[in-house]
Length: 418
Ligand code: UD1
Image: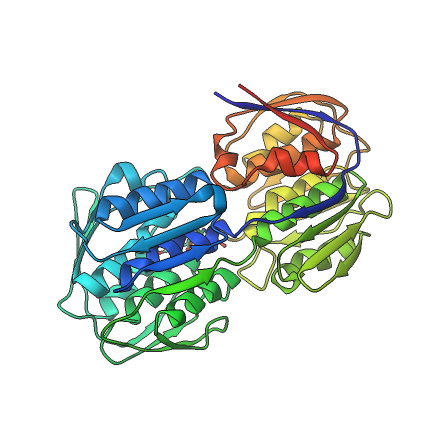
């Protein structure tokens, strides 16, 4: 199994380009199930989760023409031969549950394995199912599968209990082919939802209000193929900025709209970094050791839960103590015990971590537990004196494209060992 070896203690300096956003690409590739014609996507990141999605689409019968080395994928859902998404494909990637909406909307039936829990929490799909029922779907749970059917979905008003990203995406994809108008309320406003809506509009869907709480959709009887470039990955960008800040460096990330991580940039400014917001880039200059600031994760435009672990790594070397509260997932502090192995001083009280910043960390063998936890361990390893070896980095390969290469480009001493 691959490991990552880091020799820490050097500031990161320089420029990197972010890849296409994983969390935008997954539902967007799946949205090809809705279109009669071929869909061409560019800036698709070369990641394990993308390969899993393509495998699932291929299993359903979508013709997949992928050149991931060039970040290009062409998908054509003209010969769907099964409407079943089996457990062995869904279990490795929860996002696959968003095939429910498009399969149901276009083909009238879907059988999708319940995704089950994952390391960061239970992650149920009740909001997805309640929403689809509102559009007239009949839903049964049988042998660990959701079986949904509807002759044709009918538009309705759907109010989400919580602005869930996945449920908003699932319902958006269901409603574009439903009969009449659908009004989605209390929607997730994440930029990835907006990128999906942009793709659906390119297929001919009629959608208004994406990026706000309420989305209006006028259903169509069919959609056409499209060309779409995936948005830049704001979490990847935030991760490199965090690594630059924690290590005392000067980093610029290119290839994304700075507005999409404003909540993070504001926190870094409060913590003493100098931030430059440019046209498609962000610069971060560390003006000394970060100062401790408190943070609470929130749905967009609040601070993203997907940056919580990386932010904690910065606070682990900050001056003073900070309180970090996680409100989105119940079990997202698994990086804490690994950060402690590097000398971080962190205590957990319920959903809050109390982080007492240390002048320095020391390298140690540690283990990645989930995707963003892995990123936080890399940041901490880059700050720690001496050698850090991170085990179980397959989590990292699910969500970061060529991460070692990009960190090397910033002057970090990092390598993959087999
Ligand atoms: C997406 C992101 C993930 C990110 C998360 C929150 C993708 C592929 N993944 O995950 O990286 O961390 O948004 O920004 O885009 N919930 C329910 N019932 C439901 C659905 C959700 O209780 O039916 C709860 C979840 O358990 C969680 C909260 O709602 O506590 C938010 O989850 P949600 O926004 O749905 O996250 P995902 O779409 O799974």
